[in-house]
Amino acid sequence: DQQVKQNSPSLSVQEGRISILNCDYTNSMFDYFLWYKKYPAEGPTFLISISSIKDKNEDGRFTVFLNKSAKHLSLHIVPSQPGDSAVYFCAARSNYGGSQGNLIFGKGTKLSVKP
Amino acid sequence: ETGVTQTPRHLVMGMTNKKSLKCEQHLGHNAMYWYKQSAKKPLELMFVYSLEERVENNSVPSRFSPECPNSSHLFLHLHTLQPEDSALYLCASSQDIPKQSSGNTIYFGEGSWLTVV
Image (tube, rainbow over all chains, first blue to last red; front, side):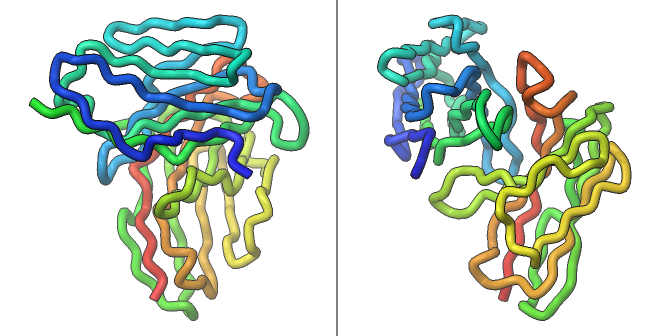
């Protein structure tokens, strides 16, 4: 049973427009959420995070929104640039139970930003 | 350069071979991890080490054997693997194990592509 879901395997956006990547989760015990970016042949790199006590965190062109009631978070990239083309992973941290503290990842969404 | 180095980057091995993946982190972190990335599956956590002590083993088959001789090095010993074990194996590190820190930035290596034939 997938606790972190990224239902869109891919997304294509025009350069300069907004990219919105979505992530849904099922475990209400998640207390911290992260986005990682992965280029081909490289490991994931940390992009931005948000604590469950907040609903928005912004860092330059990247903003993460958290809707706890809907168990949904999204990553907004604006304006999108061709260099943003990568696979984006959503991850959540559980603060409960045997896997306390470990990250659970979604399957990823491949973003393509077209010039 | 993320500060986490993995070797080899690519490995092809037969089902009866014994091989090892190596990971080294230069970040002064206390926690190290092995993740598995299979096609069309989420990243799966395999092992967690904190200060050289294994703190988590996520029901990983015994044909995968981790070793952490010190806080900077982590190995994954591979023995009698199956073709379905072919995947990208990612090493990662963080300052502390997640429940000990308010944040949880994990730094990944570039991964080792493993093909079992």
